[in-house]
Length: 179
Image (cartoon, rainbow, N blue to C red; front, side):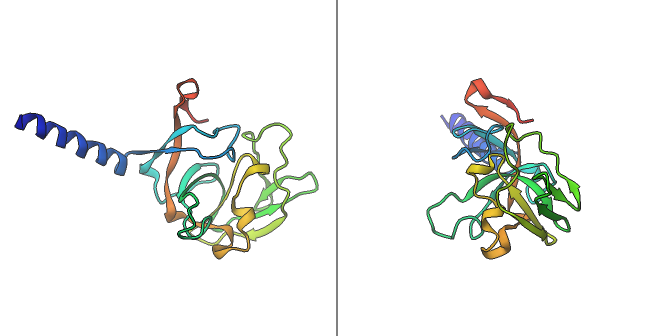
């Protein structure tokens, strides 16, 4: 009996350690990241990458006070694509409708065909330690563009990153690595 109780405690501690230091599951609540992620997908965030962001990463971050007012009842965790990081100048849009980073057109192969990169114009420099994030489904995403007038100017501190999204684990028909 004591051995079984010890085994249960060890397994629980191992599960907590994995969640804290290795991967953490999240459910995608909306269509804002389609077509790559769909509402209802369960994803794993790689905790080894917490507090970091690179252009192109899909990240889960704590949006409290930046994307959702504290205590608003809105989701605390958000999943978006990092488009620009500290020091980058991000601008929308060129005459062809593209977003640029430091004057170079941002290639966005993850957008659904025919998707306009942004219906909101912007031209800003991302402060050090912050990131500018967008949903892949630009017509149905609350992201840095829609928060430009909010605290932080729509740019989230990189230290709010919980982890990078590396795989879908549910539903099984969509399970696998995120490209």
